[in-house]
Length: 231
Image (cartoon, rainbow, N blue to C red; front, side, top):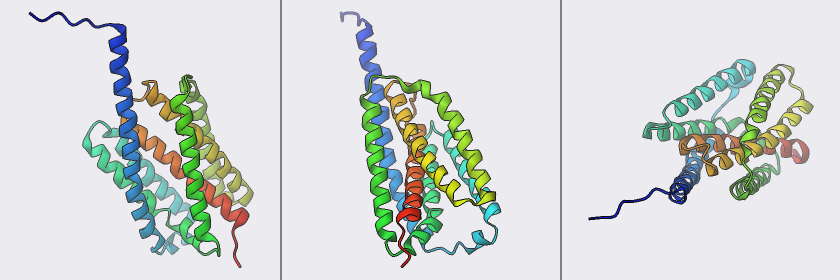
């Protein structure tokens, strides 16, 4: 006769830690995979003609935002099934394609390729720093949620406003704010996984991917404006 298994707080805590570590590992693994369709999409986008967007920039941006948020909604809706993974990869492919206009503008600069490399490297450094901090700190950062929600709304309003005003100074300010906001989002999301607040790796990957994407595009725009060499 086998002895009864006793469920203790220590065993529960151990099981929870294992589950949280699994979510974090799956998140990092899927995040790495998402970079493949992003790069493929970026190569495609760099070779596409986006002149139709210049003809109706406001309408084009609004349509792109609708597609982006529609795909994000579809990923979240199916985050508990394998379909969510495929939708996420389709989303990252699309996000790579719409990098095209920015990359094309960067590559018209004499040091454009270098700026893209620096932006990618800077993004990687920010991600690793935020990941290391959020995974090792004992603080629960869940209290940042409300602040980040308000920040997201403010940034979205500012971004939509600048579509109409087209102010370079405001655009740079928005880019700087996006870098700060997205860095905080990475820390918040990973910390939430570590503390058990986020238990779905697809949802966590989506959040971190968007933050990384925003940091890269914002940093590249700032570098182009400050150090871009047209000669």
